[in-house]
Every structure is written in structure tokens, then in C-alpha cells.
Amino acid sequence: MHFPSFLLSLGLFAFILTGQEYRLSSESLTRGVNVPTGRIEIFEFNESKIYPETARRCWLYIPAQYDGTKPAALMVFQDGHEYVSETGSQRVPVVFDNLIARGEMPVTLGLFINPGHRGGDLPTAKGWANRNNRSFEYDSMGGDYARFLINELLPFVQKKFSLKISEDPELRAIGGMSSGAICAFTVAWERPDQFRKVLSQIGSFVNIRGGNVYPSLIRKTERKPIRTFLQEGSNDLNNLHGDWPLANREMVSALTFSGYDVKFVLGEGSHSGKHGGVILPDSLRWLWRPVTRPPEPSTNNWTGDEALNKILLGGGTGTPWERVGDSYGFTDGACGAADGTFYYSDLTKALIYRQKVTEAKPSVWLAGGPKISGLKFGPDGRLYAATQGENQRIIAIDPLTREISEVATNVKPNDLIVSKSKWVYYTDTGAGQICAVPLGAGTVSGPRPVAGGINKPNGIALSPNQDVLMVSEYGGTNVWTFLVNADGGLSGGERSMTLVVPAGRKDSGGDGATVDYLGRTYVTSHAGIQMFDWTGRLGGVIGRPEGKAMVSCAFAGLGREYLYVCAGDAIFRRKTLTHAADIP
Image 1 (cartoon, rainbow, N blue to C red):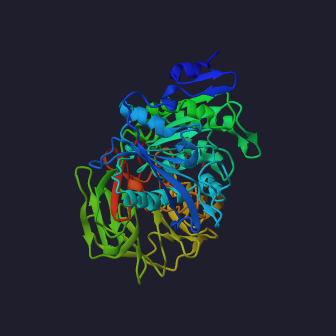
Image 2 (image 1 turned 45 degrees about the vertical axis):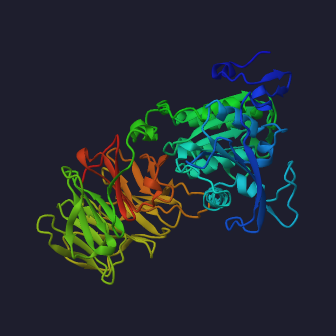
Image 3 (image 1 turned 180 degrees about the vertical axis):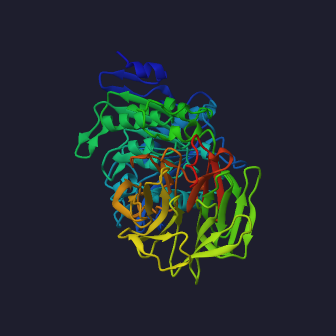
């Protein structure tokens, strides 16, 4: 029999293929000599609030080596009946017993979960009988199933069976076949802080409920610490939802491009678990091998294509987020000075903090002032601010004397930017407007709007040459761009950048914005910091620090090469391969 070269290169020879028939090896059929047998516990779970009115059968494999003295690794399988059976295509308990006994995987608890079913006619534990909540749970994008697993089922299992499960995400794996495979990937994608190993067999990365977008998401999202093994058959499905072999090849291509630790084995089978079951022992050996440094992301880009590997060192693994300060009320107004000094506010406590390039930590720079939601330097060297509270204003702060003067009253500003032509532009989120205030005209009351019809405008920035103004939509899905006229007005408003919206949300949460010296725009959002090139094309999404929501961002620090973010009660930064645009 001729074996494809990619199988030979992987060394996956744990199976015999005769014609179209895959045969299990002894590692799946029998336990080795002196290999102890783990036990199986069967239970039902019908207490979900995330999937209310559902019931499901589950199985728990407890290896003989587990004595409860220390936490065990964990592997979760969707469509659990197919994996737990010792007469089916996978026979996980037998494979686990053999691999654990030989030290080829850690002492690992196996959790086998059947999909939820609504109604009083729960199908039998075995077989592929209809479980009517399966597609909703497995094929849907977003974090619902991850929350069900992490917040509901795992605590229930730990309590019921008095288990100690490792909290190390490197010791947690998840897998499945078909829709169960894309479900497993989605759990790790949404919660890599909990699961970092994925086994995908004949994965349904097609358009059943939007999963076909994964290859593009992978290419344009900062690399996550996920290791993925994918198995597919060249004769798999091709129907109204998509082409399974093609979809899996696209997944592998995207994962490889973005520098993931990934293996792909393509066999000759159709939409069944036979091939995946035959290579299961080798699949698990590869998944559970020691942690290694993932490959570098691809640099095969056209000139002008702004992939994240042009922004982040090592494609994102070179410099992680660094926590600069914490224990604040609510941080906002990220702002960088020309010398790299970083300023920001604690809005709830009416404080402005400052961190010079030579300082290890920030300190209070101005106390007892107004509550501030936006900070930017102007061409006169003063620090301009949008204030909140009963008396909302645009103010200017002298950086030497810290004297405060009014620029505009009778305003409702959220964020602002100051141009070298001496105009302050600010977003009025509630009114859906951008307003402009001329400098040098004294205190202005009720400045004129220069653009409107924007869905909750929030972050605002100017291109490096100051001829284009960008505004993010908090309530929508776009970043607007306007041409800046000589008289301070705006024209040509377009929704020229489309923000990624996480599954389950209707808006992007587009918030603070900044630009770098090459005109790339960075916008904080629900998904992370979204980076666009100067033409408005999405270049990628930079991951949120510690999964925290972010409000505003700015380049500052040594060489102005650090990207700082205000994230609730904390401030984070990371070194980049770019730097800030010139301060007006």
C-alpha cells in the first residue's frame, strides 16, 4: 500500500490500511502486559443555566494511577459515547491505559460528554441518536460552550467525584469529531487560559453556524498558545455547508502561517471516526509531548501587507503584556508625550498618573483635578483633556505648572485629539457627533458639530500627516474616516474600516484609538486591539492582556515603541516593532 509522504514524515504507523478499511492496532485493542485498568463512572448532568432545560449523559475515566494526592491532567471529549466505548472506533480508555502506563502521556482524567437534549425523551447513552441541542452547542461560535464546560460541568464533576484537576492549561486537552471537533477548537480559541491542546477529527470548519471564518480569524488574530492535531479524510463531505477536506486544509494553512504548533494527517476515509481512531495513539503522543517553542509565523507577505508579525516581536510570543500598574478605580485617557512619557487618568478618583521613560513605575502627577476620560498633547505642548461629571469641559493643563484653563464648556466629550492646525476634535458619544473647537479663541461654549450620524463615536485619532481623522464606533462595527479641511471642518465621511465583532455580540465595542508612524490605526475593542493598515484593511487583532477589557491605548516609553493600554483597574504595555507617530 502506498502511504502519502506527509504520513511517512509524521511517522504515524499505528494503523494498517487495506483498500478503504482502517484497522486498529494493538494499542487500541488490548491493554499491555501489567497495564492497570482505569475505571469508568457514568452520570447525567441536567443543571445547566447556559443551556437550560437540557439533559446529557456523561462518562468519567479515572486512571488507576490517580490517587487524589495531586491534581491530574484532563482531556475532554465531545460526543462522549463514541470515545468512551471499548468496542467503537476510538476506544479511549484502552489507549489511555496503555499510554499512561508507558509514561507517554500524564496521568489524565477523561471526561466524555454527550450533547444536550431538550425534552423528556433523552436518547440512549450509546449510538448517534438525535440529541437536539447538538448543533447549537457544537457548531456555534463564541464562548457559551466554554463557559458551560468551565463554569458548570467541571465544578460539578470535581465535587461529585472529589477530584483534583490541574489548573495548568498545558495539562488540559479537548477533542472531538465533526461538529465536536470545531466545538473543541472553539473552547481552546475562546479560553486558552483553560485548554491548550486540541484534537480535531474530521472537523466541521464549514459554514454550519459560521465556523468557516476560522482560517481568516486565525490569520488576523495574535497567535494563541494552542497546540492542534487535525485528522481528515480526502473523501469527506462536500455539501451545502462546505467542503470538509478543503476547510481542514485551510485551517492547517492558516495555523501554519500564524506560527501555531500544528500537525495534519490526511487519510482516504470519509466522514467517520475510523481513521481518527486508528491514529489516536500517535495523535495523543504528539499532543502530550513536552512543551516546545512554536515555529515562527510566516513572513511571506506582499510589500504593504501589514500582518501582525510586522508589529509584534516573534509574532506575539516575543514580548507578552507587562503589567505596569494596578489597583486603580477605572483607568482611561492613555496618552504618550513626544519624549515617551506616558500619561493616563484614574477616572473615578480624579487622578492623572505619569511614567517617565526612566521610571520603573508610574506615580500620581495631578491630584484633586477633574475626572478625565481623554488626554492628548497639543502643538503648544499643553495636555488637553475631556472631563466627566456635572461640569463637563475641554481643558488644557500646563505640563510645568499644572495650571488648568478652560477651552470649551457646555460640551459632552468622551475622547479627543488635537491637530497641529490648532483644532481640538472630540467625540460626543451620546449625540453621535464629532465636534471641533478652535484654539486661541478663548473659552468656547457649545462648539459646532462637524460630523454626525455615527453609532456611539468613541476613540479618535489623526493620521501622521494630519489630513485624515479616524473615529471608532462603540455601538457599531466600523471605524469612520474623514478628510480634514483647511478650515477645520471634516468631509468625505466613510465607514472605511470594519471591526471584528465577537460571536454573540452585536457591536464591536470600538473604543480608544491611536496611530503609529506608518499610519496604521489601532482600536481597542471587545475582541482586542484591532490594527488596520493605512488603506483601512484589517491587519490583525492583538490579544487582550489577561483577557481584560480595554478602554484606550497609546504608544509611549523608550523610543515610543511600547503599546500601552488602560484596562479597567490596571495598566499594561508591550514592546513592539513600530513606534508612535510624531506628536503635533
